[in-house]
Image (tube, rainbow, N blue to C red):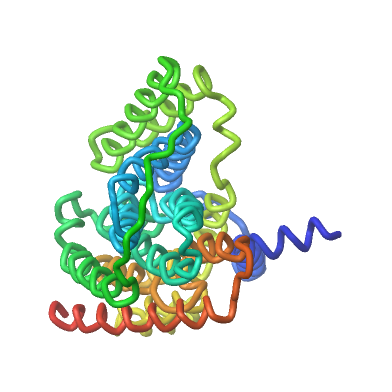
Length: 372
């Protein structure tokens, strides 16, 4: 019974999406149209990326890069700048979830060694904001981008051009916060790495680099998603099959259940008409608002069924990741990491997290006003 409670607690979005999908089936009897609800391309790319990122993590590629960069800083502000910068830049390519899973624990260790555990909250909160905002620049950055990019018909350069102003504004604001919240003081850190650069490890890294490149080609519509997924799965089956147990498959099932729910809702005229009017009148505002309560991935899938202006949804759901702790599920990753530290103060964390996120959200909305 306790294991069921733990599962329900850890997979709230999955459980809610499953319940919504099942309830909607009572109103729209399952038929052949159900198969058309699923966006197989998005799911296959997502799975390929999750497998590839799990491989990079297993080889400690990101930690090695982080350790090298941090070891070259001689002030605590410089260290924090690198830690937050790593989350911001890496999230564009390895997703916000993976960036936080990798660099938040690394940051906790680094700050502990520096004797600056007083900076845990400020640094982790800013890393979370950095990962959520850095990830918005590319389709690879987060799940909703991957899905909405698929729907939009845009090419890669058009997507980057759409989100670039918000990324630049976010980077500037992050720098301002770092200089305000982190006082400069000397620190002596040396690069600490016990990773053995064996020929086998180098071969595996090369393999995962190749798999990542194939995933990018699929995103850019150069390679079909079927061939891309088959290549990635076949490669890990031959060389690193245990990595298939690492991806978060619950995210894939969450997508499937939400696709079913939205597909059914669109076939219920009364609900479809109301939601259509709400979303079409204010895609950005509605998607930001919905994200605060159901997180931005479900908000993206829900709203996409009722508007053709996908570009506004891309902007809205990315900015919607700011705000509450559940606005972006990636935020919960860093929160859980903080809760595992000694003397954690969850109330203080949530207070600072919410305050910082609201400030960022207000600034980002002001940036939106310049373009819409």
